[in-house]
Structures are given as structure tokens and as C-alpha cells.
Length: 139
Image 1 (cartoon, rainbow, N blue to C red):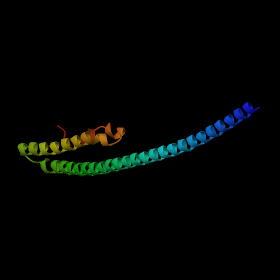
Image 2: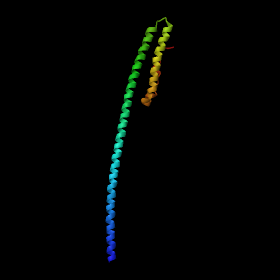
Image 3: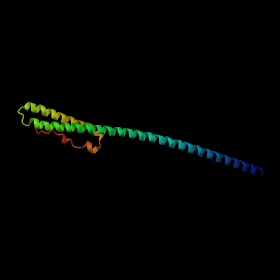
Image 4: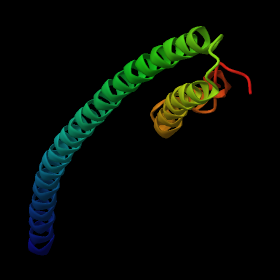
């Protein structure tokens, strides 16, 4: 009987000790999990902020490019109109060719700007035809 009582006491003590250790382990595991969740939330917030800053700069760059393209297109349009008006009846062919070269050069510069900055726009814009930038005068 004494042996049975000792076995019961040992079993009870071990059970209590294991239950206590299990509870301690659960508490520590929950604290570690909560700390990891907070770390991941913070990391996600930083990544989201970096993404927001990067794309706001991209949008700003797009606006600058659009403004520059528009300015150049208006300039090429005006230069083309002036070329047609001013050289239409001019007997000086050299002057006409020089003026034609100036207008064509501005036209090419506008096309190059469009092509070199197309990566900042959506794919549809990047693949649009640049035939609208052809010179005003037929050869």
C-alpha cells in the first residue's frame, strides 16, 4: 500500500509539473507568435509605404513627360503650320529645305522623347504608333 501511495504521489507531481510546463510553453509560444505578427505587420507597413512613394514619384514623372510631350507637339504643330505658310510661295528652295530640316528635327526629337519614355506608361501607350509625328510636308 505504501508503494501504491508513493506511485500515486509521484504520478500526481509529474502530472502537475507537466501541466505547468505545458502552460508556460503555451504562454511563451503565444508571446513569440504575437511578437512575430507585430514584426510582420510593421514590415508590411514599411513595404506599403515604399510602394506608395515609388509610385507617386512615377506618377509625377509621367505628368512631367506628358507636359513635355504636349509642349513639343504643340511646338511641332505650330512650326509645321508656319513652314507651310511661309514657304508655300517662296522661290528660295535652300531656305525651304533648311526650314524643312528644322521642323523635321523637332519632329524627330518629339518622337524620340515618346519612345524613350514609353516605359513609364502602360503597355498600350508604349505600343501606339508614332506615325502621328510625321512631317507636315510631303516629299
